[in-house]
Image 1 (tube, rainbow, N blue to C red):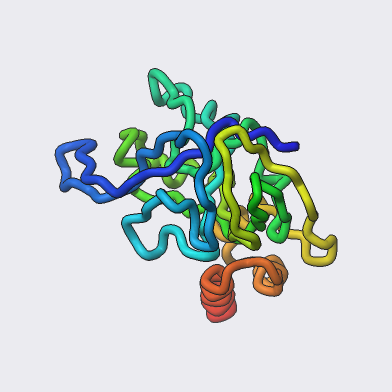
Image 2: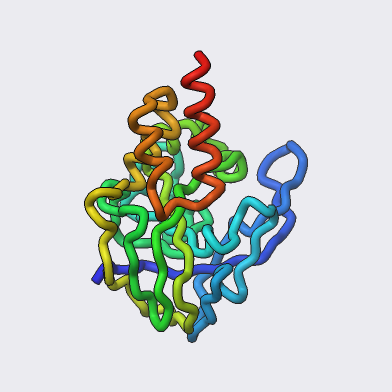
Amino acid sequence: MIPVYAISTGKIETLNYDQKRPMHSALNKTMFSGKMWLSYTGFSEDEQAYKDHGGPHKAVCCFSKKNYAMYKDDINILPDYAMFGENLTLVDLDENDVYFGNQYQLGEAIVEVSEIREPCWKIQRKYGIKHLVKRMSSSGKTGFYMRVLKEGYVQQQDHLLLLKTAESPTRLSVQNLNDIYYNDRENIDRLNKAINNPYLSPKRIEKLKLLKEKAMNK
């Protein structure tokens, strides 16, 4: 069993975190009570402000609470859960130990690791931490997304149960892909391995192919 600290959802709202223009986001999430339906596109009461957030390959966003400590010197009081707008705040699941294609039971639902989480400017705006996006992405501790293979009800007290680990020949960790995508963009061998991973979302494959094309044309 992989302990889940909190399961959270949020609604789109107008947020004013500084003197710049307001932003629309469902970044501020709260724990729900009882149970909630988890569909192929996410939790029934969860919203996303932009088309690149959510969807079948980004149905559930996960982040490890242990990684909150990376920002303890930047924030006086760290949030207790959903610090980066994640649906699942995991007690401690390192990106090195999460492979694309890993399948888990969550309540009645079955989910599968499918995407890296690309940190966006909104979280940097929320906390006012300089270079937060760059720090998070270069560290590889970004969290990750899961697709839903089987819909079902999820309760607040549910935890993740590993059902299947990705096959060894195609095994690619979230940490590894983050390192390729953010820190090693011209490594053709690593890009090829990632491009051939059968569990990555089509959009991620497209982005990796573009990186490979740029690297080969340098």
